[in-house]
Amino acid sequence: MTWTAAELGVLARAVAQAPSVHNSQPWALVPGDDVIELRERTEVELPRHDPEGRDRLMSCGAALVNLRLALSVLGRRPQVTLLPRPDVVAEVRTSARGEPSPSELGRYSAIYRRSSYRAPFALHPVPAPVLRELAHAAVAPGAGARLLEPRTESGALAELLGHAGLVLRDDRAYQRELTAWTAQFRQVPAAATTLPWSGLVRADTRLPDPVTLAERIAAESMLVVLTDGDTRRDHVLAGTALQETWLAAITHGLAGSVLTQPLHLHEVRAGLIERLALPGRPQALLRFGYPVTAAPPAARSARR
Image (cartoon, rainbow, N blue to C red; front, side, top):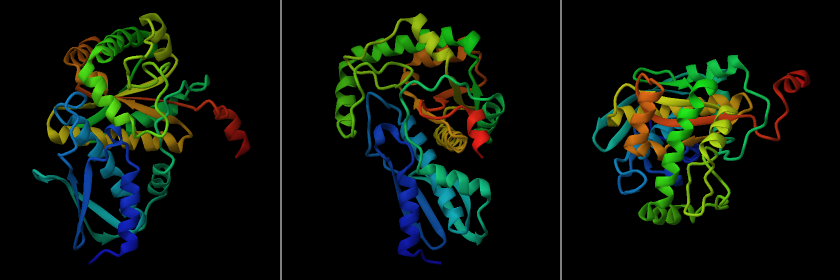
């Protein structure tokens, strides 16, 4: 069955909304009869930020989530084969038909409300049942997520992120690459932006001391996306886990942003595994909470 121009437009718009490293959108959609291929654009390179292409594949994994949801909304039940060929991230067959579930409709709508929120969150905490649901949203064969314990783990995370900030701020090649990519942003992040509000550490970024950073981390909700291994397949799965969690957070009125830059420093990644006793390979950190303009959860419930 061939695709109509309207259907291809729906798919392209949904996939274009996926988060990607420096908004590079390193993927391409190739339609066929009852099939869509999601291909990795390997020419999109970030030698200093993403030397192994890990973030590029995670970006493709996030795009795959959006593609699946858009296909479901179109009444097609996607059947996904990961990495069937070296140049194809996923082959998605769509011969089966079916109506989308309420959950799929909700997450599809969230695709167009997702954006990176790098400011401090509102003070009211995320309820524990929502935190548990978000951690479960990332669970898939080979991938998952673990919530960080603010009381006992913020200090260690602050030390590691603070070290990463200093290294990245002083890396001239990294700074040149960052400048080239962030020039396309509508609004360049302010110099006062600091970790963990953003992973975009510039040469003029004012980094907080470890105690202040630990306090900021402890005031947020944060999870780490983990995979069993560190292969190309694991990186794609990490991207799907991250995007599923992010979209689930949006359906609960939350905002979020992702942090991957520090994890490209081997000492930071190894330090996270050791000091937080992680049961897998950390691929990304996802921070989330209520935006400062949001009403407290109880107030929102009362209005419904």
